[in-house]
Length: 258
Image 1 (cartoon, rainbow, N blue to C red):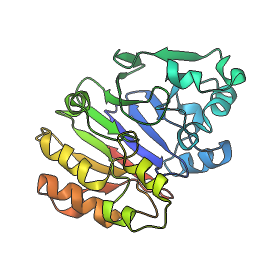
Image 2: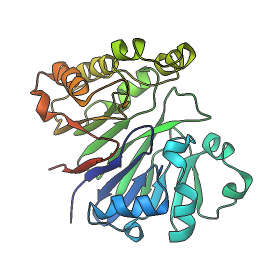
Image 3: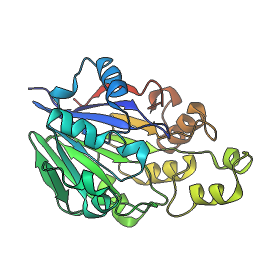
Image 4: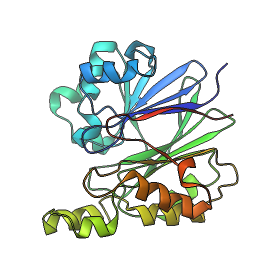
């Protein structure tokens, strides 16, 4: 039976979705793409949507949720989300029979995957991120977060793989053409993580078991893959090319934990 592996269909402000697989179970983490685009991106990984058991939703922002309900209805998939995220959905969407409400501190299982949600500070109703386990390995995912809390640090300790938001380089953001209120939102406590903050988090974690570190949710205007890689690599003393990047257009190819 296959162990834990993961891939990204795309990561950024124009749409987000990750695939996480353990044994015979595949789930989507977010679905910010419409049916046609989702089908195309899944095909790059040799997958079809009918392979999946569920969609997990981190929060209601459209780049993470735009395709969730349509995809779930069409393919009879379960949806897992928090009460707050549901409250931000329309009434028509909220009546979906296959909806499973989750507690941000309560572990649950989907097939061969054990899933540990945890709350994060972001400008959404009840945002959550996840740690995935197949019983042997742990994959920690952290995006759409404005700052690091002690609980985040605890949840991401001793993981075998980490997907960390590197949304922006502070210097690039400060010198960008973005309006000042938008800059303040992005870099605020309920915005997005910059390269250095993610690097500081990584440096403080136990990374003795790390097989993969992935930079994700990069701004196409206020960051570069090279800057994100360099920041994370400096935190653990590895070669910058060892750090992966989940991009908006190409996502990230399969990464497997062994």
